[in-house]
Image (cartoon, rainbow, N blue to C red):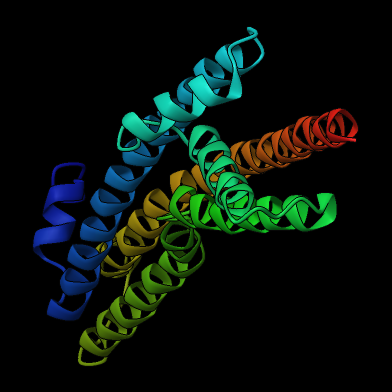
Length: 230
């Protein structure tokens, strides 16, 4: 009985529809795990790059030197460095146009940084919606396979004169495997989604804090230059 009810035996003897559901769930699960590992390494890289740039930013290096380095290493820089570069670029463009109004300079720099911030967050949030979909849909796909399998099992039992637990158990067990695979696909996706969403919120808060701090530094520089000009 144990050998007949092994997982492999149940999968191989399930109906075609249930087997297709199981195959779909296995593909979804593999894709989900691949997305989880990609996102895990991507977020670690983002955090490391942000840490490195923030350490350099507060080390006393001049803004012009930081901007030159950020422009040179644009492809390898992190979100915080790219946001800084976009703000500095817009600020310098406005200064080159001989705009001296402090509010105009600061509004331009802030708008550039906010636009860059939104682009960076769009990149960081890639695959989150996929994990959310896997976590919410997979159990229902597995449940569909289970319901179909049970219907198929009871249809096959209709022609029997006597029905015992031994005759019902294999068909039901085959159907329940689909639900088990659906949960196996959904649970890691939900756990990973919650963790990544929390990590991305922290990254967003950190980037927004940097935008405000950098804006304050630019405003002080504009005020100092205006005072020296007068």
